[in-house]
Image (cartoon, rainbow, N blue to C red; front, side, top):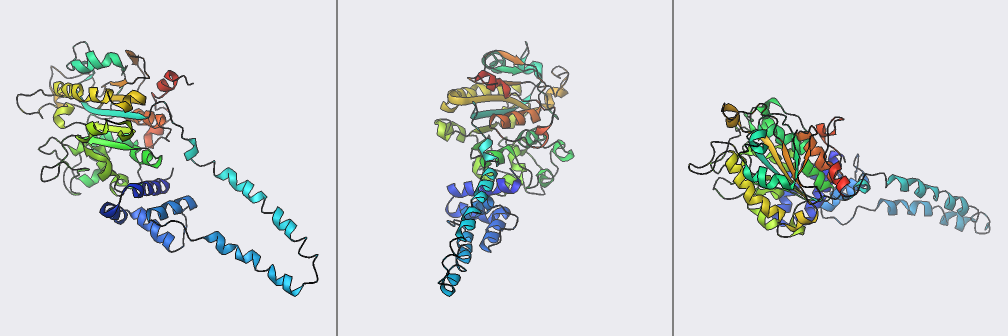
Length: 432
């Protein structure tokens, strides 16, 4: 689906749920939607397809387009009465004329009908997995997470036997943002994202760069990011908290770090209001898990710096580093596994989206390769205790989730050498 098509479908979907002030803000802040509305209002569809024009008008709360077809229908009929009145005695002339007119339009609908099935939407079919939960943590190193001397006993001893261990999952960079952006959009690391964004706007992707979240909305599916510690200036929970454009990206006293929230770095989500609606504080997760219909198809869980496992970020006297991350898993994971959505058709991914720099700096804990982090897949559709040794990375993570939801791969996720673990679910479901 093109950027324009995706943006219009997103705008139309948002219009179905937003009212009042939020709807007004959505329309006012959306360059794409506003331009589309003006174009349609001026009866000039231009390069916009009929489907896109209709979706834009739905956003504008207009019931239908100005009928172009009725304007054309009087024209073929206007010549007909004139010959009938001037050449009344000649009754044989009108009778042959209708025959060719009736026969010629018949092939035209036959030619148009194949065009409709060739669109993208009919290709998407529900797969065996319809609810994905991804928890993103900081890795203390593969051995410290999954080895015999693991510093994360809940992950390695309790959760790992319930799922499939990805033994060869590696990061693109040790910093969190390059991996986060790649995981949700397929975009490669940049100098700015590797450096932690000296200025916020340096790392924000242009509006044409789509994300997994955009794709899900375009496919009439739902997503949520649950971000711990996200607050406004008054220390109250708030959605989609982001730095000022010229400001450096820095952590908040609550432990919230924008670098652990990749969704705030895309204009495609910021400008149409998706981020405000779906990028929410972690406290909302427990309520959304209670009913399957309230649970998003894709849930991205991002703990605070402390609970993600970055050493040196926890209050004195409390678990720190991998111990804090393991305690976070021990609290949140049982809630996910007990949810109706997970039991029905769920997949939990314990994903390490960064390497803890403190672990790498300590000779006693420094991993041989800080980018080799591993990962864990847990699902009712997988055989417990398995291993997968394929070479995966953040592009593979995106590709796999896209495959599960029958979406086209974005960016580098579409590479010929990028592997996907989605095939394990097709096999488990009796597929190819």
